[in-house]
Image 1 (cartoon, rainbow, N blue to C red):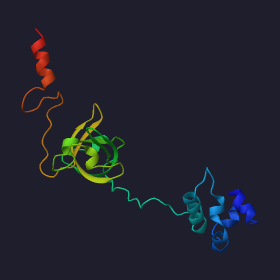
Image 2 (image 1 turned 90 degrees about the vertical axis):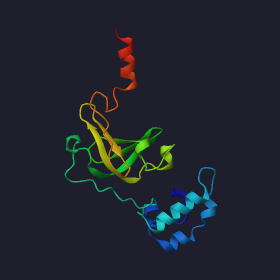
Image 3 (image 1 turned 180 degrees about the vertical axis):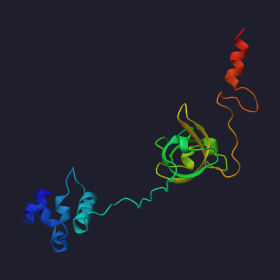
Length: 175
């Protein structure tokens, strides 16, 4: 950039916003192994209209004002959040309580989802409902499905159908 400004007999700062000077610069002349023409075109656009953000417009999620910490959450609560990570088993969503919640792959859509990346990407705004809040382990279970929320069971991990498989195996092994 310094070389371009020097050849234009100006300082780098003097190029900013000067459309007449910037448009006369022979940009292809400055293509090198380190800097290609697309990069130089980006620099030219930035000099013409400085301060513009080339990223897509970002709308922040509407976090609820009454929810600031984990203890403020309760099952059934509807929230808006942002996907912060997508894994093979689901998506983590920031709902504004300094602890991301998990939307399990089975809870990402009203249809079968084999790969969470099919329906969720980092940065997506989504509407979720709280399924369960585990204050001890600081975990939030969320759902993006419509319809009633299915209870997940008690704190031990058992549900209406009986003990989990690991609990049943331990019961058989124990004398």
